Length: 138
Image (cartoon, rainbow, N blue to C red; front, side, top):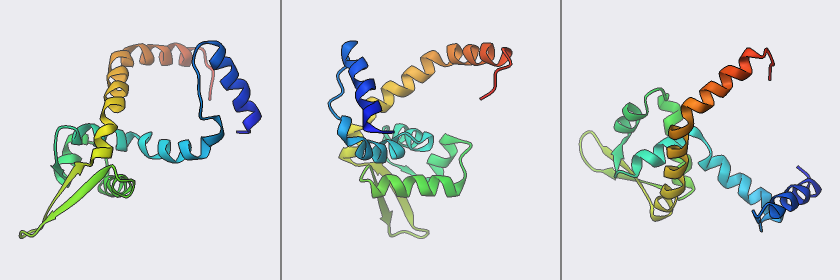
């Protein structure tokens, strides 16, 4: 997206009372949103908001996530400083995942987004059904 387009969009938003001061920093925003905008990351952060969990507990609570995808998600969240991984020297080794202080700071926005998704799920499904009935395709 070129910055000229962003300026137009931001200008329209500002006229509507929504100011966006970060127009020149889209690359930084994309990097962060790529991590926290991922559906699995959102679910992991939301679940870890209740306290540390082991890998299999997370996998069981999330449901339809592959072991590989959950592993990649946890590694990415750990790399970005949102999740910590603690290995306990037991046999077999026990590994707990927990939110870091930075990860905890993400809980508010994630809760708001997931609460919104829950509240408007039926409305969105109905809108999709109406759209699909028109025969339009993506």
